[in-house]
Image (tube, rainbow, N blue to C red; front, side, top):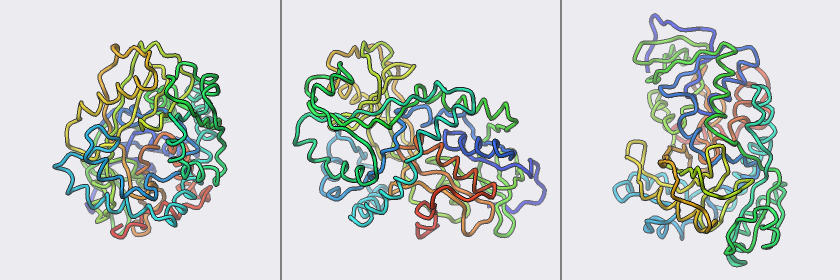
Length: 425
């Protein structure tokens, strides 16, 4: 934490730390309201998780990750190297405090409260995405395709009954399908899947990297400044954050938005703000010549992955690996995705895959992001921790921060997303 003496920079511009899809959406909502913006990121805009996600836009994502009964299943998942959750042995002790907080959120009362907050946040997701891509002149990026969940048998479907009851309680529309209904929507789904659930209001991005790059290009046309430097610290005066520090010096700004994804907690540590942010490392593989004709994201319940048709090919994305920000990727986790796609589409050609991708999804133990202003530091705002749903939440989060920073009321109650819900924040 640095107290500034002399600083360069645009003192009237808002600094957005992070050029992922969330940071870019925040910046766009500020620029369209007439604010000047400087966006800091050492990497190309949209090149992290914003490029590597499953492309799903999911207004029905109202079910917390931690559900009742979770505690009994965690040990088995941890010990199964091919399971949906993987934690290397040398990371178990480091992950334990986060996992304990995560499991504590599975109490019925907390599940209900978290579901309400998720519903408020994600309900307008598709509409706001369509509005944003229309404003930047790229409406083809977003399609309203619906989303198809798949089950092999009635027993497997019954085990997810609590999830669907929560969705129904929050007004999420869905339709149960038999095998004929599945084939009517996606005839190439393998015969092992006998039950489907279709969510008609979900959508998708046809190319998440182009999606982010298109917003960045529109921002540049509107005069936003991109700085390819890593923010190392904040500049402060008293209890006011009035700039940022990079390797090239200190720059003054009218306010700072932290949208640095999984790296946000490291940065905030300089202000004494401790947030239980964990990176759930995710993987994807793109098959450029799979031979599979698919219209929408498909979610096989037993595989815990999304399979999505994109401009780059058929993408299978998923798995959860807790291993921190610094460990190298685990190729074995990516190879599991080949089995996932083959289980759902036995006729798929799986030889022509691109090299696998791994990225860091910023996850908080209560499945909710951090959005809003700091109570203790004037000029400091937050937009991070969206977990597996950063793309879905980005347009909504951008709208909230844009309004707050321009003196407008937030469109929803942002109390559930405040950073002060964590004791050390």
